[in-house]
Length: 133
Image (cartoon, rainbow, N blue to C red; front, side, top):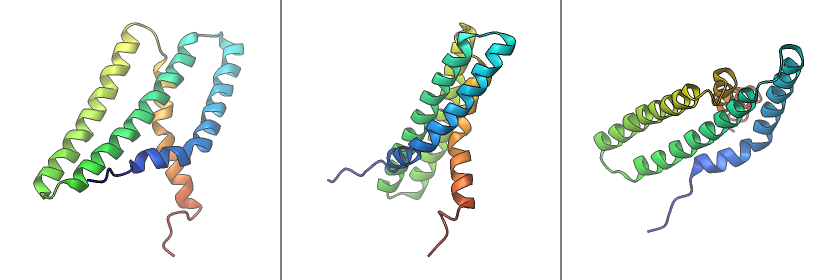
């Protein structure tokens, strides 16, 4: 049986230039704020953790989508989609809560990268990338 490509991984590769721009903008903002209010390593570790969680979330979405497509039963596919949705967000919450408990990250900069895909797709839609030809 031929292994399917992870479409989310392909899209993540396509997003990479935009994600780098978003990260640089946030990094410059955090650094500028550091000059004013003082530097805190947690702002930078939060940004790194948020990026890792965002990438993992997208890859898990792709893996789940492939599993749902292979499933021939509608109820099973719906269960997998719902389970994945809940498990991903619970997992993100637990990881962020643990990192916050040990004061390793800033919640503000950790959450920002989780919105990068939404920002990317919104901008792409306005540019007409998803218009039908």
